[in-house]
Length: 70
Image (cartoon, rainbow, N blue to C red; front, side, top):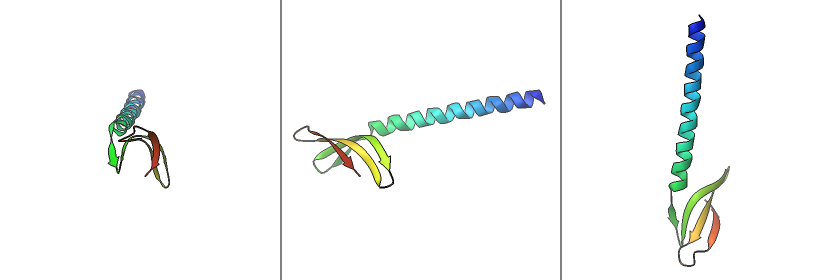
């Protein structure tokens, strides 16, 4: 009985670690994504809400930094 509890605890820890690893990988992938929207290159997501995402962008010609809600 004690071994089952230890195995269950070990499995839960493994699942938590796996989930944390997946979240980190997703965040890293999301940061690497770049989109072109008109004259802007959109990069890192800096926020997310019910109406969409907020991304950091750069104007392709001037290099001006902007924030875009998409």
